[in-house]
Length: 221
Ligand code: C5P
Image (cartoon, rainbow, N blue to C red; front, side, top):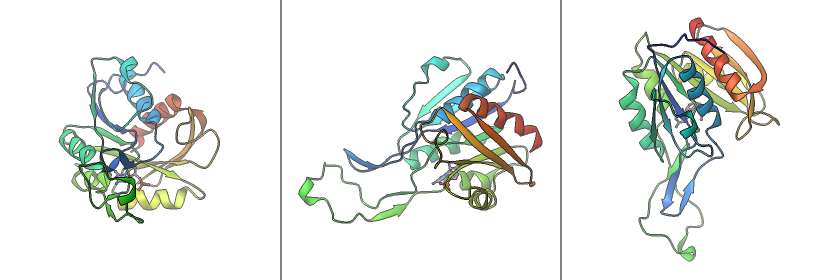
């Protein structure tokens, strides 16, 4: 893909999973590897964008992207990811929220490691902020905001509900209950749904090809 259609644009991408620690050695997390977000960063860089990648824990490296147009901001928790995204968002033209944010956190954090015998039998949980919904509510008309919806079973209905509720311009709905798609896979399959009702199916392809398909969809938003 030799396109150079993002010269002069700032693309803000979140990638990887967040972690919510209970104590210094235990956390609530998820199996996100960050591969899709890294692929989006790579695709946007190759198309001439300057990219800010706010990332949780990644299982793949980003140093090979080695590009002066890339700024990487590592974070751990959803609260840190929200803070980083809020400070980068106002100057961003295109924001793609690819990160798998933990939905809940332990209500109490213990700064000391809890001895096994004092671990509670059930864990009291508190919600974490919905980061992309917050961005959707402050978004200016020229800014494009794209989310992801990792789903099992029917992917369209819940993804459409999230698109509307979080005030996104588009959502990439992808099945995570199929071989060759979703968490950790090198390949992906998806349906992109826009707020104006356009839908585009992306047949199974590599995550880098998927990233280019998503960027190709932007002019339709
Ligand atoms: O978890 P959910 O399916 O609602 O995620 C849909 C979109 O919302 C994704 O783009 C995800 O990154 C984002 N999200 C978020 N903050 C959360 C949960 C999800 O920004 N706390």
